[in-house]
Image (cartoon, rainbow, N blue to C red; front, top):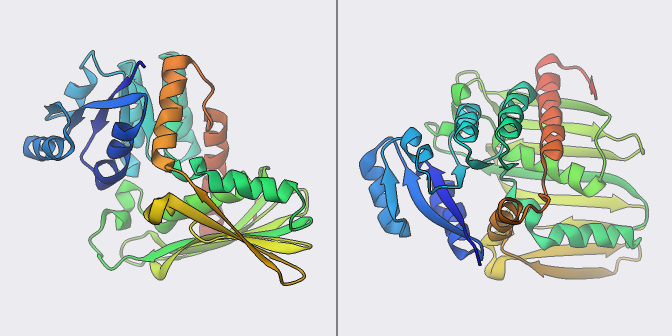
Length: 331
């Protein structure tokens, strides 16, 4: 089987611990190079992960003719620059979430990728885990009746106050880091785009980033949803869908890969108090990179395409607008 040849821009932890190993586990990809602005750091990562070549600049990696695609786990504020640079070098691009800081940035990135005829995808890996498709199947089967409400939460306590996630200039904040998963999950499970958004946040007086963000998304079909993200709360990563006849709760909504056998649990509580538990297993990072590689190598349609990415970014824009103005934002 033909394998997509990947290069990685930076030695960021998410790449070293999750995405690079996932590409190496995949059936249709291989990592052939990694770049860092610190040559020694690149060499150490390459030795650790058995990557053949290293570069001491991102530009040099993009100039390598063997590399077909790049994975970009750089800080959020640098995504636009390097996605466009990679596209202009005819490299297909998988970029960490959030893919951009604003919709305007994303539109520029999409334009560059279309101009250069390269595949472009945001690395929202969680959606590739089969537990979410199972949830949608249970809802469609009428397991909990008519859906009326959904709640999504993702948080952890960030005790390192020097962490890059608190750097406003690099696109820090709880919503960009973990809250965006909540927005995506709500849109994914409800299967529609929200009509209005209201959000409220606690912005750190020194760092100028949202430490905690909460809000509501309302839908034209009458469904109301809520979300919350935080760097100041205990670890949580769950969503709950409430219907007229029961409730579905996904207990490891975004990182089931940290569980044994990468298994996620779906708890269904019916109005007669009966409980059913479903287990779904899947290697979400590997499923993501295989989906991307299939789009490049076999011209298959991406599971998560550019239109969906743009819709996600519009919702993220609206959340930040509402949290700063205190007003409901209509979409």
